[in-house]
Every structure is written in structure tokens, then in C-alpha cells.
Length: 314
Image (cartoon, rainbow, N blue to C red; front, side):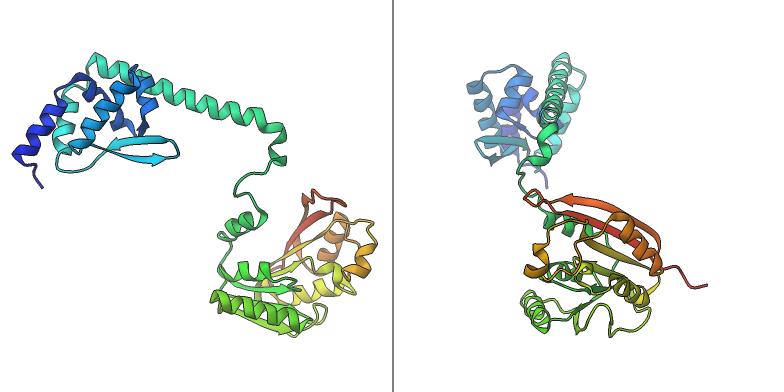
């Protein structure tokens, strides 16, 4: 769409000023605030705002509000080719070169401020309450990278992990000995419109599932409830496809006896070597066990994450 004669006249009048051309040249580099332009061009606030108002009136720039600051950028439209031609004619001017040096100095200062902040808080960063940093948010983000496959979640607990898995999985089979837990999961899944979860009532040490039927088998805080953890892992290996993987999330060995009565825990966690041996003896290869996180509240339970792979059949 071509620009009308009236609009072209208005735009040319707006461009007939050295300061406004310098502002437009800076906005070619990217969005800037009034204070940014004042710093780069060494102008006062009143003068900068006046020029920006005029440029906005002729549709050469647009602005947006963010908190207490206005940010300006070039506006696309029929006047854009004319503006680009005028700025290109003066690309080698000393004024534009000087302004670019100021703009680059602004970018360096911003980078230094960012680096200075993170250097300053580095020692206590992990202890700060930061917006958006939650274990659920991190888990959902990482699960986006998980394969779209068949998952088995053994011992579902509150079902939160099951629901998150269902968002990325081809299907999830949720196993728990509590029919009430499974019903609660079904209700939550229905409310969210999740249709790829199958619930199965059963014990994780005697699974009513077919051999080699799942790509990934998960036991999240379930192994310490098993009468015989080795049997639960043998069952997990049995239902895992050749080449499939197992994920175990559980507690590092602790001495909090109260969990036996209050939480029905049969085992007070596992040592790294103990959990590694259990997985290896169950038939998993490439076993890895790591400490994942320490609860900040007493008694400071430590979480272990263990993975392994069922070898491909020869």
C-alpha cells in the first residue's frame, strides 16, 4: 500500500529534524525506553518525550506500557519504506556513528548489571524464593522432552505425577492397591479431560500386567512401601520392554521411625549402593543413582533418583 501525498508531507516534515532522525535510527536497533534514549542521545526528558509524541502522531513509532515505563519501537506501515530510505542515506554520518557507540555502551552496561546481580546473590541464590521456581514447574518442563510412549506408574500416591505423565504419554497405566486412590485419580483426570490413563488395582510386587508391555516404568516414593523391594523391582523389569527404562524416586536412608506408623512406610529409605544393587539384581543395566534434593524443612529428607535400562533381548 502506497503512502498518500498528505501523509507523505506529514512524514517528511517529521523527518526534517536531526534529533528525530537520530531517535528513529536508534529505534532501528530495537525497542528502547525514554530513559534509554535520553542516555544514548544525551537529551533531556522533556525534549525526548516531545519528539516521540510527534513521531507517534505521524505513525512512525508505537509504544507500550510496562510498569512505570513506556517503551518505543518503529511502527510498520506505508511510511516505513520512506523512513528506511532516509535513514539509509545517512547511515555513514558521524552523528549516527556516535549514537551507535552510545547504544553499544548501553547494552554493555545492562549486561554488566545482570552479571553483577547474579554474582552478588550467587552464594544464597538457592535459598531465595523466586517467582515460578517450583518442583512441579520444573517437572512439567522436563517432561516435555520425554518420549511419547507407554508408561506404567506403580504406586501412584496422590496421582500428581501420573497426571503430568499423561500430558506427554501415549498412555499411562496407573497401579495402586487402593481403589480409593485410583478413583480419586480418575475423577481428577476426567475433570481435566485426560483420556489416556488406565487404572489397575494391584500390588507392585505382583503386578496384573503383561510382560514387556511398557517403555517406561516409574516408582515414585513407592518402593519404601513394598514388603520386599527386590520383588517390586523384578516385577518392574518384567513389564518393561527390552530397551525400556525404569525410574525410581525414593528416600535416602534415614532414622525417622515415626513414618512406619504415620505413613505406612515399611523401609526407612535406601542407601545409594543398596538401591543400585537392587536394580542390578532385578536385571536392569546402566544403573545410576543420584541424590536429587534435600527437603529444607526438618527432618530434611533427602530424595534419591535412580534409573536403569532393561537390556535388549539377544
